[in-house]
Every structure is written in structure tokens, then in C-alpha cells.
Image 1 (cartoon, helix red, strand yellow):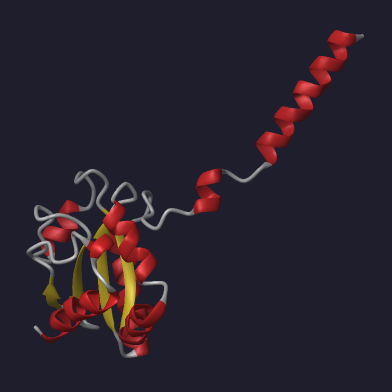
Image 2: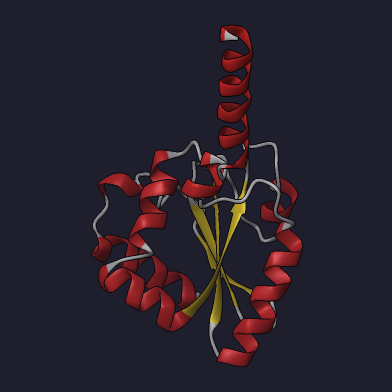
Length: 157
């Protein structure tokens, strides 16, 4: 009787665990590792044209603390307001510099100076500017004003 009860409890526990949403889904990493970067950029361009905005392409990775800090900054305060007003944002996962590097290269974006790095595109897909010298690679210690200054320069190039 004890053995059958133990098996029943273990089976019930496994069923409960299997029915829970995954932790990855709950935490939802900012850089989707399964995303199709080109399709996401094309969707952003379509939205940008409809909304009369530019596209902000953010290259980063979920292991990168500066990328995560920049992503958090884009979600709060004056930085979030400015980004939302000016841009349709698309995040491109670069993995361990082994994913979507070709997409970055096509935009003239170098990942060699560190991530996060960004490119600003016009509504028709032309690269207006990009961070080429690691301007955002220390995003954890940058204030919102410093990030806003970087973004302001990119849209004007």
C-alpha cells in the first residue's frame, strides 16, 4: 500500500510540474533566441512607415549585462518616452557573436567594440546611423541622458 501511494504522489507531483509554464517563458528574455531577425526588422519597417517613425535596431544578447541594462532603460523614464516617440524598436540576438552577425554587417554595424550596439534606420530601411565605437557597451554605468545623446546623434547622421 505504501509503495502504491508513493508512486501516486510522485506521478501527481510530476504532472503538476509539467503543467507549469516554463521559467524561461515567465522571465521572457529580452533577446529572442529563436527570432528571425530579418523578418522582425521588416515588420518594424512596416510599422515605422505607418507610424512615421524611425527603426531602432538593438543588437545584444541575454548573457550581456549591459544589454539587459539598456533594455530596462528603454522601458522606463525619459529614455523610454523618447524611444517610444521616435522609434519602432527591434531587438536582434547576436548569441555569443555567432548569430545574426551578417545582419549587423549589412547595416555597417560592428560588434567588435562590444554590445549592445544599435543602428537607426529610416522608414524605407536606409541606415541613418549606428554605434561603431562601443558607445553603448557600458550601458550599465550610463545614465539615461548619456544614452539619449547617443541616440540623438544617430538619427541625424
